[in-house]
Amino acid sequence: MVRPCWSDSENPMFHDRPDTMTPFSSMLGTMMRSEDDFAITLPPDWLQGRTAYGGLSAALCVQAALRAHPDLPPLRSAQFAFIGPATGALRITPRLLRQGKSAAFASVDLGGDSGLAVRATLCFGVGRELAHDYSQYAMPRAPASDACPDYFVWEPRPNFMSHFEGKLAGGGMPVSGSAAAQMLVWLRHRDTTAPADLVSLIALADALPPISFATFVSAHQEPHLFDREEAVFENRGSSQ
Image (cartoon, rainbow, N blue to C red; front, side, top):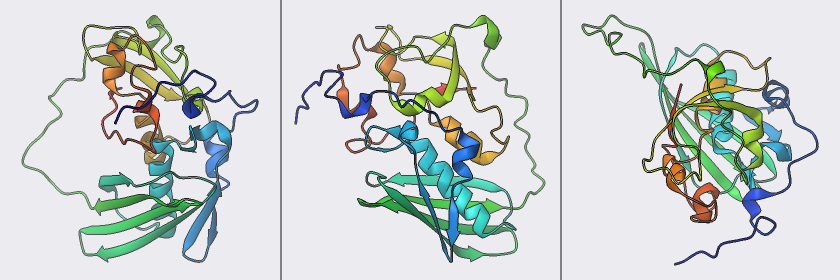
């Protein structure tokens, strides 16, 4: 099936930017608990078209699990299935599936007006001594962030990207027609009060578009790439 290419005014992914921006930390503070559930209504600046930004949905799932079970050991792995659009007032339901001496498993369902949107499976585990050390593997070489050009300057782009600051350290910019599908980006929250924790990192890690976007010459070449109601991308690119 071939999707039509919209003009900027018609494409639901590229609505006009909201007049006000809600900082990440302020938005997290509006998540309220009601018995076994958590509830939150997202402002339009955190949307990805008609649905919540996927990285934020994942972060909310982890935040709900940690608030419901604050004594869990560190998070070791997480899987997020983006099942449908997260619209309207959101309800987040964490469940502790099993907890043993060294590991605990939890599931989290996030849904809204359109039904179930995200299902997360989280594994928490205590630390242990390892026979192998992986610290010898070097990070990618990259110039200092202040020597790199701004990243989030291309248009059109979804509203939620305005919450992040990026610096292109290597590869191509989106819709630049780059010969290689590669990009290396310094990335951080614009909210300087965002906590330096795992929830903030999860929200940050999904901010980049698919790396193939660097090879495009137009945002309309593949209009569904930013539409989570049509496609889900688990690997959106490389970030530092």
